[in-house]
Image 1 (cartoon, helix red, strand yellow):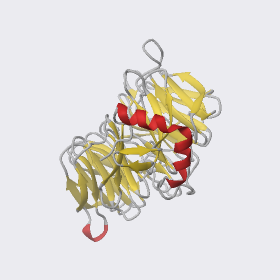
Image 2: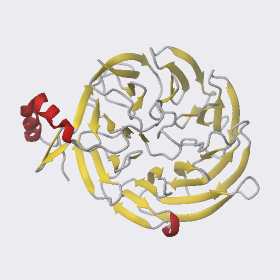
Image 3: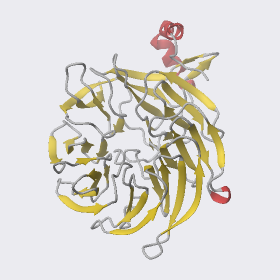
Image 4: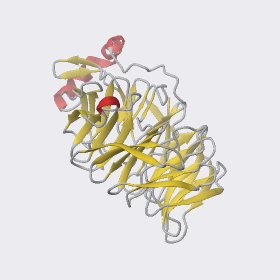
Length: 407
C-alpha cells in the first residue's frame, strides 16, 4: 500500500515537481466513475443517504483551495458532522439543536434540550421534519418542523445513538434504534411506534434501503431485516458476526452491505443468494466512523490516514497519511477528510482515484489543503459550493462551525 504523503522525502519530491507538473498530469488522473451524477446539492443525512454510503454522486463542495466564508461559535459537545438540507445547516450538540443559513451563517432557530437531558444522535432532515435522538426526561426520537417547533416525540427504551433513517420520503415511516438493542419503525407523520424488534446488544449503526433495514451492534453483529408491514413487523433475513463493534454500515444497490468494525477492519457482506457471506474482509486498518462507498472504491479513516480499497475485491488501492480520525465524505470524484491532530488541524480534498502512481510515490492525490485555526472536531460536510466542519478554534478559541468556499 502506498501513501502519497507519508514521509518527508516524498513531500519534497512532490514539491519539486511544481504546480505545473501536477496540472499536466491531471488529465491522467483516474477518479471514481459517477463524478457527474445527479445527486442532491445538499447533505441531509450524516452519511448523506439512508443507505449510509457517505457518498454523493454529484460534485459538491469547493473544487479549489477555499477560504473561510463564515464562522459561528458553538458550545457543547458536538455529536457528529453538520448536515445540510436545502439552504439550512443543522448542528446538534449535547445541549442544543441549531439551524443556520448556508449563505452567511445567520442563526435561524435554536432549541435547548430538557433539563437533566440531552441530545444524543446526529441530525437527519427530510422535506417534512428534523429528527434527532434525545435522552433524559424524554428518551427517544424528537422531531421538529423546519421552523424549530417540536412536532412529536417517539419514546424508546434507551438512548438513540445511530442516526434516524427514512428510506422513502413518500412513505410514512422511518427507522430508529437504541442502545438497549431495539429496532423501531416509527410513523413519520406523528411519531407513533408501529413495531419494535429486539436485537442483541446496543445498536451503533443503522441503514435502510426500501424495505431492508440493517443494524450493527456494539458486539460486532450485522443483522438484516425485512419490513413486513405494521401487522407482521420485521423478519430477520441474515446475521453475520465479526470481531469488534460495528462502526459503519452502508447498503449497496445489490443489497450487499459494507461494514466497518472497531479494531477489525472493513468487510463486504453479500446480499442475494449468498446473503450474509463475507465476500471480502480487510482486517486493517479499522474505521473510526463511517465509510465512503463510491462507485469503484471504499474509503476509510483510522486516525493515521485515509485508505482506499477496491470495492469489488477489497484490495488496497492507495492511502494518504495524516491524523484523519473523523469520518470522510465523498462527492463526485473527490474525498474530503478532516485532520483532527491537536498540533494543527486541517481539511483536505483528495482525488478519489489517488492521483498518478510512480513506484512508491503518487502525484496529484491531494487537490487542496486548508489549515484550520484549531483541530477539526467533526467530519467534513460537502454541500452546494461549500464545505462545513466544526473546529476547536485553537488553544484559547471557542468551538466554531465554519463554512469554507473556494477563493
